Image (cartoon, rainbow, N blue to C red):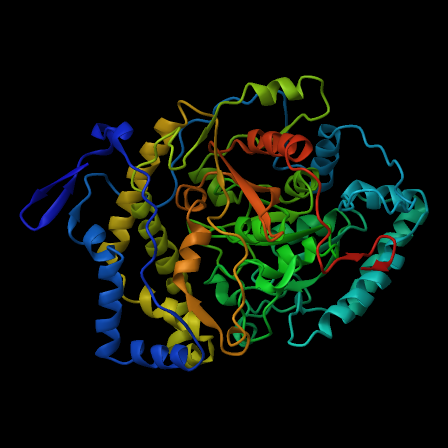
Length: 586
């Protein structure tokens, strides 16, 4: 795929690459795993003027960053935002209007779902397999006067109080006001009494990640100081759309500081632990969002995904995480609102709940409607007899060591993504870091930022040249398949080192394993979803990722629903689970 020209490597143009000759060679990130005293010492060294530069150059060389960005000629022109080919048609779908009211879109989404059978919703059967309550279960219970949003709010508040009493601290929410929860729940209860509920989402408890504005709560981004610089005066666009549907917005979830990590470690507030195994990480950066859904406290939560940050914790916590096509959701009101790799997306207990929340929050920004020209959003029609036939017609491809499809240059993708997301994050944070705020960040954030500060303008442009090159490879693959199937992560939930709870840790090898399969969705903007498919020998959840063509959320949602229905097997109740619909703390 390349030849030598003096000291430089010259890549063949992507159009001339023989993709069948590619080899799948997962490459481990070469970096130390540090915590405690050694982590503090390492940060001190890399922030020192001369020795720090030497250490960072060594790390970049070990991971071939310098070789690929500086010593390789990349023939493609840069692509600074994802550029998509025309959308392929999808069979048996409902099209939605972006300009319509969120509650109207949710009503249309409801019509896409199979018939609802409440079954034995209020009959306790100890022999029945575990299942999460769905949004339609809550709506049925409210309409049937089996309970009210106000009663559920009291159950929720009691459960949060119990959760907050853990030692060491492992908060799900880092900004939370029980009186605000009661106020919203009481308003919803009154609407149900009057028969004037706003949508199927009325009275549904939804949490919001701490880098998304949700008035009246501050947006800290998992830091101890970001809210001091940026006052929240109104909801983010995605949050306001949920509020229009009557959702009860319970507060701001814990997260990996500044979304700069994939484990969910946060030494500022305490690290949220995995509901399936409290000695293990949730994954990140949307750690609290995934855990609060997995623990049964919320039907849904919003997360952000710039490098797998919705899909990774969803996989590790055994729930569903949807990453939409770049530009499908409006990012106004988020801390990182102007990047080219991140989106806001739902984390839910089931695929049908993901469909309902996605319908509420979708809608491109005015600027992206001009630049990206998004087609009408579509949802799969799961209510029709032909739905299963449409699923059966999908062409699937997977990449493993026995390659069924070939994706060249995966390590180049990793480097291009790190440079892109790192440079974009740094560009938004630089004014504040220069004002003395760097020392108030956690140690692993400071390591990441020190690395990001070494990237030059030419490195960023080279990464965007790789982005166009990789887009060509994927467009060619999508001529043969409709959906790419991978594991969501290359490992299940990693163990939390006790020292990491107080000081934090850096473990870029683990981050590399967690991110190995997710980056095409971010660098190239494709839609992707993680759906639970079982457990490993230790009982830890495993997620399967489905990557679709641009704008083809309907296809991945259709297949995810089929996998959930037929392939996933019985679910295991998490060790930490709360039944707030019935009021049982388990």
